[in-house]
Image (cartoon, rainbow, N blue to C red):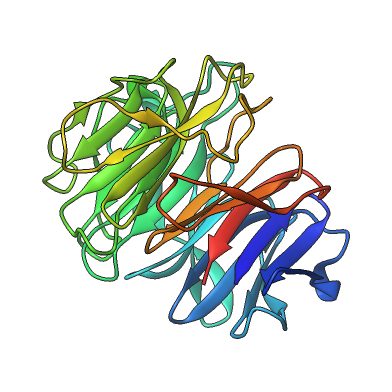
Amino acid sequence: MITIATTEGMHLIEDGKDIRVDALAGQEIRALAGGEGGRYALVGGRELWGSTNDRDWSLVAPVPAKRTGTCVAITPLGVLMGTARAHLLRLTGGELVRVPAFDNADGRNTWYTPWGAPADVRSISAAATGPVFVNVHVGGVLRSAEGGERWQPTLDIEEDVHQVLAPAARPDVVLVAAFAGFGRSDDGGETWRWDNEGMHAHYCRAVALAGDTVLVSASAGHHGRRAAVYRRRLDERGSFERCREGLPEWFSDNVDTGCLAASGNTVVLGTEEGTVFRSSDAGLHWETVAKGLAPIRGVALG
């Protein structure tokens, strides 16, 4: 099952069929999150919806007044939602409640955006056990291993991270896609190294891990010029290899945060043009599974 979030509703791809979720038709789905506890969708930045079977969706909780949701994740702290102006909410007793300690995180007064607006929470990731990582744009990646009571910066905010990923099978590994390129930590965010060898450009927006293969999207800049997706064995040194077979020569816009997802060796990616591609071999070969959709804001497998 592939779940697709678009600016005009949600679609499911199952057995080659495109199924529209009627309850969410015409609504902007900004982000998706999934796990053993079900699946969640951020609708219009104003509502959190949920499903236990992918087909039947219902409202779980409204986003509090004066807050706009930007991303959502299932974590050891429960369901977390990031918001505009870089706040963090937790689903508690059917309500989305502010996480006060996040508002007091070290370095918060240095967060910014290049265009002058306040920073936003852009992505959240955590393995089933272990720390929770929250990516602020632009504010780096913050980590909490203390139940959300303390948030610690993990890298220089000028690396300009667009997505953080804490792979479930690798509890000490943290991956990021950033303006600085592909970043990796092997000690839970204490230290980082950067590796862009083989990429035509280092501006990266999305990252996923398919088995032992990491995939990352890269382009010449925030407007998405000459955008492509690359792959490489996570634990092998060497150049990234560009994903080509079954994909366009260049994407016209960035493969954005949340629009690249993997489960086992299966990978899906969604584009601004409303096309979804799938690979069954960790990005070597691709096929088109949906097209003509509204602009895609997120994809999920499972």
